[in-house]
Length: 429
Image 1 (cartoon, rainbow, N blue to C red):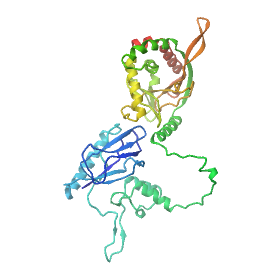
Image 2 (cartoon, rainbow, N blue to C red; image 1 turned 180 degrees about the horizontal axis):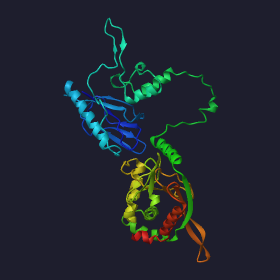
Image 3 (cartoon, rainbow, N blue to C red; image 1 turned 30 degrees about the vertical axis):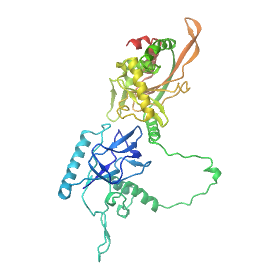
Image 4 (cartoon, helix red, strand yellow; image 1 turned 135 degrees about the vertical axis):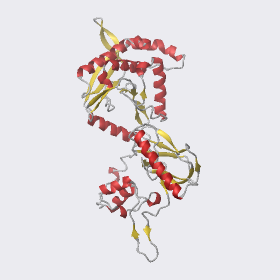
């Protein structure tokens, strides 16, 4: 009996993934849990394990190709299951699928059981009847639900489409290819080499870049952005950090300013619940979260990734130093997990290390706010009625004005600045 394993949704709202590397070959025996393929999604690079024991009888997609969730990945031949037993096993898997979908919907990191009819007994559905002396009558096409829906949307007779899937099943790509082949081709205008090839470079969009584009548009479309700018005088923060830097170094911990900013932000969020909230317009409610998980935007060679530090308010500066270093390393190496990426309630982005001073950060929707950290520099300040040299840290706070009022924004930012002005409170907390 042949089992079709489809690319599962291994994250919240995952649509597609790119095949990075195949670990198996056709004809190779596999065990349950054995890695079949390495896939790159919009957030992580992860291995997909085999859900069944058997022999690889077919593989779909080449390295570098992008496939959709629900598309067939491999077919696994399972020995000793035939005939009625195969049908019964198929029904059993369908029931398992229904239970998983109802019980575990939206659970990040859970591999879904393959969809209905994952086990395919021998069938001639969709085949031409070309017996001698009989006319060739094409039966109803075997097709995936997605392909049928797309064919209906494009007004295409699915029975006219040649299927390339298992058992000549019509797939979504078959529908799209059929439309392209039968569409009217308008004459193309020729352009000189100087206008095209010599002056442009094209590069395929990565999964991360697609998701960044999608999330930025969603945020701008759904949230009412407002940004407030201010400066924190951080001479005392510099002194305290330098004091503890050597002590932390003895424990092989690199102390920078981010843990202080994380801690200050979490303590300020506890005082201003609207900044740690989100709005559910469909249900007509505001959701105030009583846990403080702060995402930190990490600039990686592949694009911006936002891993989340959990329960920041409960952790010491030392703990935060260790976690931020570890999670940033995992993000850059693309070894980060979905667990590291979920359940954020607020976000911090630091562009100051690159050289920026102020910015208008885009909210990590549906969160209520994002704090941007600029480049620290020496500036003239007024201290005790006299001009002195100070150290200022530019802050840019963007909020969803539907959730947060202007007064709350200012008070929240003032509290963060107050903590940064007296960083010993953060060390002792």
